[in-house]
Length: 193
Image 1 (cartoon, rainbow, N blue to C red):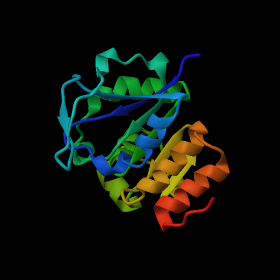
Image 2: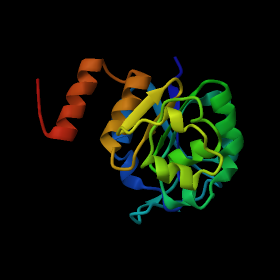
Image 3: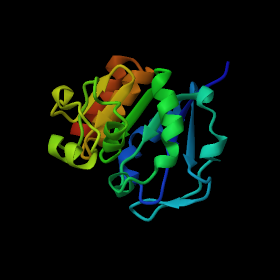
């Protein structure tokens, strides 16, 4: 049986902490492969100065292989950068594949119009409207840490643990009960057997 492939897009200045809780849990799974890619396949540096060598370049990513796409935040989104992934992202959205975005990456989904008919969140509604000029999904905005609606997962920048929980639920990484135990441990320091 082939593993489901979860792709994480990395770029210079990506917010490393925003994927730090979810990636180890997915990596431990025998059902999923976690694949990191950058625009050109060359190493990138995170906002925290972590140097990362991706597995692939964007040109090596086949949309048919993508089970989920994860987009960490970073100021590049606010500057209108990273648009080279538009064709891949649009294809995945059209095919109903799950796209998860946190912090500034939510503005990218807003700019593409993906949030216009889905419940979603971001760092703040006014922030989203200011950065994403083509965003018009205000009536679907929810002031929450993280929101999942159909094939779109969004989270604000301080919700790394909630973002992970939404992703784990979407891919059914564990039972709902075990995901909640994980959440309580990392969010509130509560350990339960």
